[in-house]
Image 1 (cartoon, helix red, strand yellow):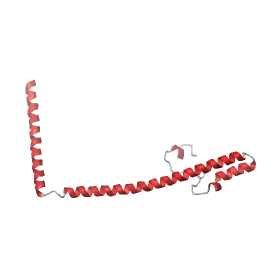
Image 2 (tube, rainbow, N blue to C red; image 1 turned 90 degrees about the horizontal axis):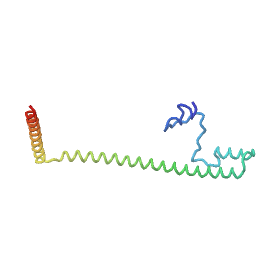
Image 3 (cartoon, one colour; image 1 turned 90 degrees about the vertical axis):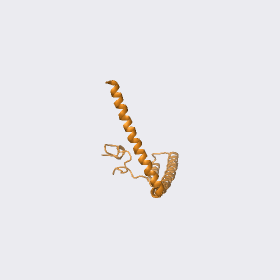
Length: 146
């Protein structure tokens, strides 16, 4: 299948592979004047298939696009480097936070642990009383309907 056919790179969003019959992509680090586009324009001009003014305009547009592509690629590289650095910082911060949480859990004094145990027992009693009250209420409402 070709690039536009079923299973081609254009049919798969984000596909990174290029079909064998796709034209080579221009390199950003090459001089635009040595590009395939310039060679084709020069050949068309030499063959008389295109006017000189159109060749100049096309070359100027190509150079402008080439420069824009180069600056955008440099921006992408910089953004990727920043993202990697931020990710490392985030991972370090998460590890530091987890260590601080673990240390804080381990820092309870005996008095605090005793208080925590007392509060847990009180909570358990309150939950049991609430459940019992709920059962009594349900029982009372059943008696009303009987």
